[in-house]
Length: 307
Image (cartoon, rainbow, N blue to C red; front, side, top):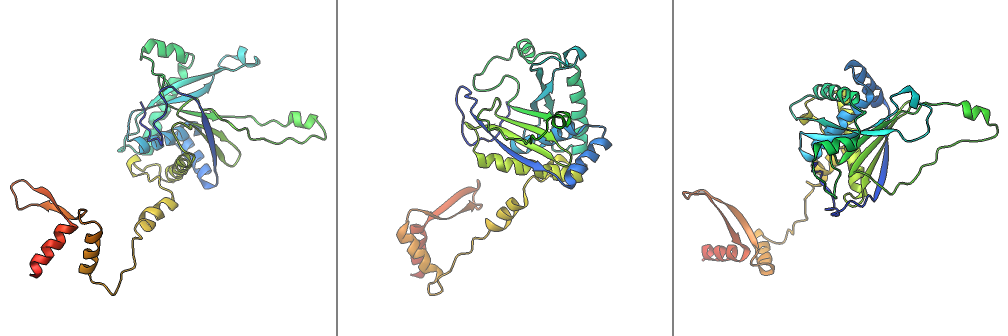
């Protein structure tokens, strides 16, 4: 099971209520991702999938992860003109260890994906039955997260045949999620569109937005430095780095210039005499022991010393 840190514990039985969050990656990053894919003998699909594994590794610390890969099921020419849903889901197992470079891991994903695609005619239900893993109504039997990449062939033939008609894309709102987390990817001419589908019983919208920023940062890093070890890939956005390094450390407080330190401790002791004032490890004993002193005890010791 993938131990993704969730905002909620979730229900005992999956309810499939969900939402989607979309974002776009463009600019030099897209071109560099294409170049990396070509130079490594992989497809853009494999490169993006490898980056998704890295994201999951960063979030969970697990180096044995199974992702469901959605693939089209029209392998035979006789199926090309038949109307209907021909889709299968393949469980792809990856091992994104921190000591591996992204390029090494990408080569592993390339080999695993090719092997899985060669066996894509095996239906998921058949595989689940053969593995006999048992059923848990709170999760899917083989994987909790899914990855899909859509390849749409652009055609203007229909539009050219209809005069005085304007076509435009209309976003559709989704309120379901089959998996705990899923990513749909669409490659366009100059950018890549991502949509993260998630279960609202597990994640808050702001958590998914942060996750999107982390994935985008990972793509930015690996496209420019594919030889980086996975452990060295920093997924924090510039805003998060500023918050951690600057904002969280901005602990300065106004100091009352008319009072001494002792006076401030006395005031705090009057408010919370039983609260711990100081704590530390006493190393003068055979077995070092953690010792502490309350504000009341601290004031008492100060008075004894003053006497």
